[in-house]
Image (cartoon, rainbow, N blue to C red; front, side):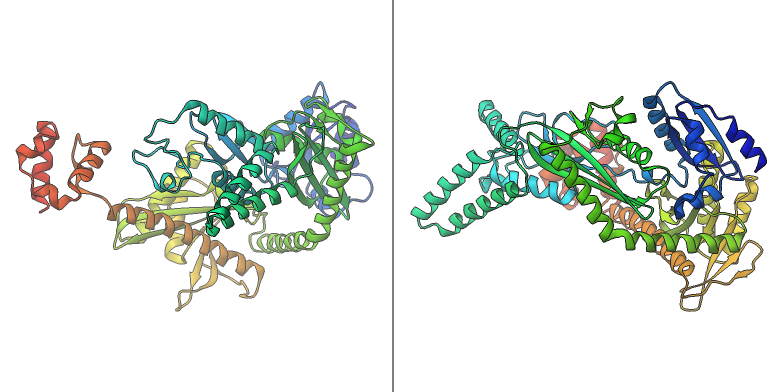
Length: 582
């Protein structure tokens, strides 16, 4: 501790990034600071909330990097968090991207829901982000009802049901006037920008025409569409004579929790929102600025960003930022903060229960293994009579599924489960060694002594040191106990959070393996003898099946008849194969 105090006294009073480390040298938190000396020393002075107190109790050492500016510190912090994935940097745990509506840049008017992944770019106009994918899909569904858009992701070769329903002019087969398509696109852009007057007037005309013809069914259909459009507009806060596009972010802190809300205005129209709630680590301004920077690394950057004045420091160097003290934008800032307060009221108990659950698991694993368990990998395999043998690995980090780290294995077909387990484990941990990937703190196999022996053999052959346990079952094939690598039974109470956690993990890996196995089995069921013919590509296979309808009909053809549609060698191979399988 004396050594740490000496190091704290030497910190520079300059902007930069600091990295807190635990006793094993692992980075557990990355933060940024305008003044490194003041910020890092503040962790070791005075009282803190629960989460920060827990972080401080685990700090054994720290490093720092001085930067030229606050902007450089913000960017470096983001990159280091992505590299180290520190335990206490909650703000970057979620890699979710937000849903947008894409008006695709193609000859036909085509809208779809997309998610922006990191620096992904889509050709066309993007609208959003939407607060959830349901809201975006509802809007796309309404647009497809209102306008004769292209409905198929890939254009088909024949006119589909949408054409016959009058919802598509037949872009796939018929020649559609370019000016007509351009007009539809312009109308959709206008609608997404908040101008629905033209479409409402058009729908009213159609409704009145249907009433005059006593076609009450269609009249009701148009009436409902008008109501849908009106409801869509009611959800928007439209500013007359103001067509600006900008974003607003604000936050609220209470009892060691923080809530952040973003509101997104396009052409004077409040389009959507973003909300985040969790425990607060570090000071609020640092936390929120990091969250906003992360948000715009995934989503489109704002034309203008309005913030409370205390957030202007870091972000004003990166975005076109401003703060306001009155008017409509000030009201939106207040509205964002009100949303934060309401979110905390609704969700604080849920977050507390989640934290209590995680803490209990953390303590139980430390008690059992005498070390911190952060990353867990669990394996399972599946097959049908030795066929379509697959393996699955699920990964849990800080007791929650890390689905981006899940892996599937297509294994050598075998009814020997132990051989399959060995193959899967060897492939996984050879890759870990080869690519210097993160090693788990705990490896779990679905089984007891025999499965543990398999895991020990593979891990030992690779000269690795990983803690191994197995999950044993009772006579009813239900999880009953945990066994360590010395074959000792580890007592786990069946009403404990640990037992609940382990059985949930087993269910998850079993689900993951079975889903993949079913997919391969279904693919095998639909496999055709045509797939095995050298030189017979997928397009030609489809043409043959469209023309002759079935394999049985193909078998009735002579070699000469096959040679009229295929080249001589391929026709001969197919002819012989069809007779082998007859």
